[in-house]
Length: 248
Image (cartoon, rainbow, N blue to C red; front, side, top):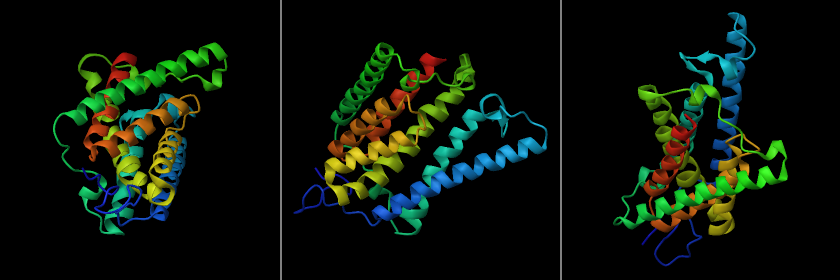
């Protein structure tokens, strides 16, 4: 089985056949960070001018949505935009090179369920460890109330955004786009580790960094193993949907 951008006939698995470079991934990451910071600065300035409170980020609205939810949408959209800019427009990449290949048979989705269980185990294990250690900074933070204060039909909104849109955008960026470039420079194992570290860093949470890093490694392995981005999207979505529903 050929893995998109990771396997080529007659070449080592660490030889990555994608048109974008490691520099493109680093520029894309910097672009996302810059746009996020600029958006936060602009929103803070506008809200201050119209007399909004200083706590708008945690308790206010943005674009008619709770601010954390609106910012989540923007961040995920920035991921897609960065991939489109640096892979599609700059390098002429096609979606197939980002892993959009139909997996063979049902077994990849069985692996996806196993990957999800591994992600849950990482969360539970880290939560238990931090409770024993007793360092609050390392504990997994509770999600903002604006993201979980839903019930019934209204729960569909965070499920669509956090459970479906988020995993789609993040898998395209971190597995389909970042992983091949890192693997070309540092080998397959190094690429999996570095892309997982980047995935964890972009969640901007010290307490969640370790379990997200572990889940990122599992998702990278799943992508490489199945040769398709769809199983990793499925596992990621399952994780987010279950977490959202339980938190709500």
